[in-house]
Length: 275
Image (cartoon, rainbow, N blue to C red; front, side, top):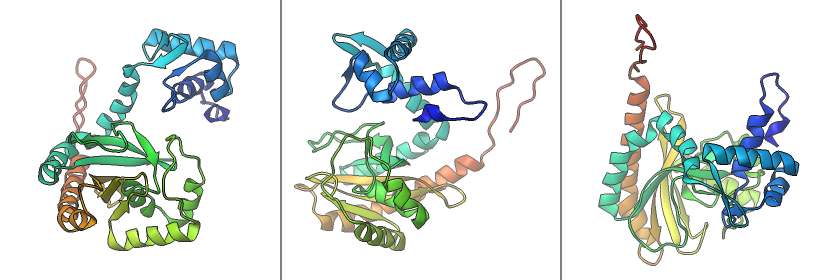
């Protein structure tokens, strides 16, 4: 558990509060005090104090039968996205890609053995799985995740995939080690990834890496399609070139953003402005 940190600057109370927030999982939006205490391993009185503190701060609210998160929790994730500057850079390119494919497009990053969606432009279509910013899926059966895993040193991938998914989703594809190693080698070789109903029935997609100014993969971007509407031929022959173009342009803009001078607002009289 995160609160087992031993450094002299480790704040156990903060770690416990974050554990309580992350204890709320898909399909369990309302949790009782006992549920939270069990999920986090905290004593009931401790869990109760944390829940009441979070309620006072506006992150949870009492609800019939227990507690539920409030939309204010999204502020934590949005602050991360805004601090990266990635969404501002990516949005016009995603909109361009959506306009030309008429398919939803997303950006994700790796979080343990899951991908976490950090940006998205969607089109109104009926799909098997609902996706929004903050949604997580197991990384390996997704095109976004394959790109991110393939960018890691091979010796790190097995360790990461050994971590349990926190998505609450059971994927269709369950490869053995030899199979997923071969899949990731292919992704590394060609520079993009695809998935055909490996995460869930009816979903296929292609994804490409997003890089910073040093060439490091910092995220991945995809075009997601419904299998009944979009063939693999259309996905690879028509959508993939557009995706690769958009990914390259986002990466260029992201590198430009990193290298641009950033002004720091002065905090007092005579304070200097850094750039």
